[in-house]
Length: 118
Image (cartoon, rainbow, N blue to C red; front, top):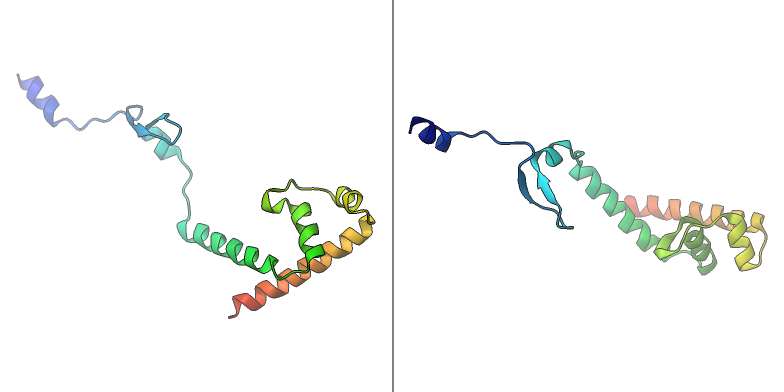
């Protein structure tokens, strides 16, 4: 009886004991949570806000520059492409693609800095 009553108050927990399920239906245990990388919530929020700002600023670029950046960096669901692939697809030289990309990135950087100082 003493052992039974003691078990009731025991707080021993196994690191491998299931404590819930993840989105895919897999069991989660304490060890999974302890081993998970820590997320800096402030940093994560800041990055998300900057991405949102950049996406809105992309709309201010001329169509050709937006097209090149979209293909080059895989934006809006496109696959990333090399300058050579973009040049072939658009029927222009690789060096012209490079100039368009450089100009677009400079404009985007300037727009981003202006937006950050508002």
